[in-house]
Image 1: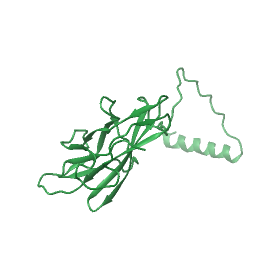
Image 2: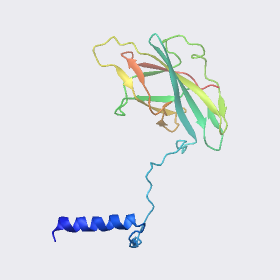
Image 3: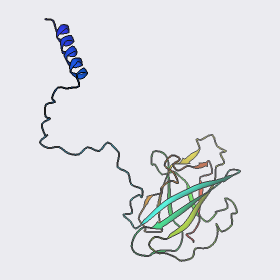
Length: 193
C-alpha cells in the first residue's frame, strides 16, 4: 500500500474511534531531566529601582508661545532623611546619550519671568516617602541653519557630589523632549516644597 493510502486508512480509523466515543490511549510523556519553568511574560516592576535612596522623575511640560517649563520631582525612596539645599545638577543628552553643548543656569537665567522660578535656595529635608520639586525652563526658538538641539535624556544628581542617575520620563510612551532649538540654554529651579 502506498504512503497516501496508509494515511487515509489511519485517518479513517481515528475518525471511527472518535465517532464511537473512544479515543486511543496517549503514551506518557517522559519527564525532562532538567526542566525549568518558562515565563511567557516580560518581568516588570511598578516602581523603578531605588539603589541610591532617591529617584528623580519628570512631570509633564507646560508649553506657551515657545516657552517650556517641565516639573521635576525627587522622592526619598530610602530609609534616611535627605538634605537638599540648592539646585539639581543636570546634564542634557541627545537620543544617542551624547551630552549636548548647553548652558545650564540656576534660576530662569533671563529666559522668562515665571513666578517662584528665581526664588533663592532654601534648605529642604525630605523624609523617607516624601517628595521635593524643581523645574526646567527653556525656549524652543530656532534661528540657526544648524540642526536644533533636542534633549532626549537627562542625567541628574540632587546636588554637587551627588550620585548621577537618569531622570525618569512622565510616561514611557512620550519619553523626555527638551527642544532647545538654537538657544542652547536651560534654566533650573532650586529644590523646594
